[in-house]
Image 1 (tube, one colour):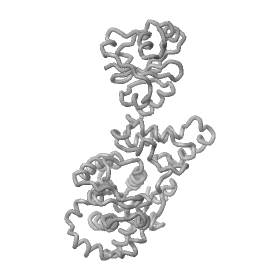
Image 2: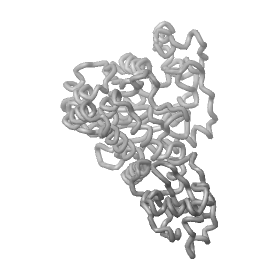
Image 3: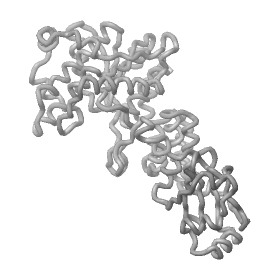
Image 4: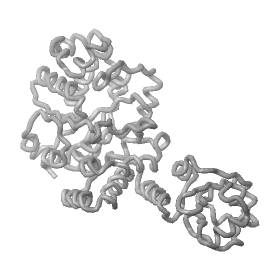
Length: 422
């Protein structure tokens, strides 16, 4: 596991690297590697996944991981990849976001296992103690305006306008790298390809002030084969917080990956072996209708983000649409699977003595009459939670609840109804 750069390149995870012989440089030592995340929201999103997975791979290769949560830089705003200035957040908003993101990061990295344990740091700790004049004298003098204007993150914003606040972001991130070098021995920074200018600024600062060589690796920014930005849907951003994007919705996002993208995304977002990846490449070519690669991608990513149980639940929920057995579901998942189907509401007490199925079908509008309901049942056209019911005297009861409050009823192949018992 020592040849980390070779591993990353094998999976097409390297966009830029400051030193092509990185594996030789770190063949014997494994210094800390850092990746920064600015808490501009209360949750990370799937766009953060690739840098996090890259950091996970470094940790698995024996490098200690440092995750910098930008309590200070988050108050400034990174101009990289932005066409307009961010809305500045308050200190309280930033602090709340930092706490939420710290909890999420623990799902991806091991923070407990001895010498390899990851560590969380917050740059507000050192910037809150740095006086402005001292910072300009100590750090600002090492940056020429010309070199800063040449950075892509700044150059791209000159036409639309960039404030001095955002212009100073490069200096702050460069100092972050210097601080982590001095205090933790960090010698490698990783990030998305839009972070290249910020990373190289830190490398230059360390060389000038400490006379030491440090390194940077960037991962590609992902777009789909259609050119669409990864992690965006018609409904908006795909988040890693289950309250904003549920495990089922995350699973659906990845299960709907196109055949042209799915193998590439398995390389990026899963820990499938090279042999497995080639097998999926063949399956996509020969049996695309089975969508085996999409199922592997969706299952692995959902498990990585939310855990095994939620991944299994999302997988089972997806099978419901295709007639799969409905077990151990939740109200939220059922409402997400069937957001637009007709709903009928009944008192929970009606399940105690049993609720006549025929009357229920008439009440919800599934059939026009009791006679039609009786014929549909006896002909095998009615399903309770995707199980066929052919007893015209059947009475719904509490054992039929598929979730806390719902029973799923289907007539024919795809006419769904949700019965809610309040």
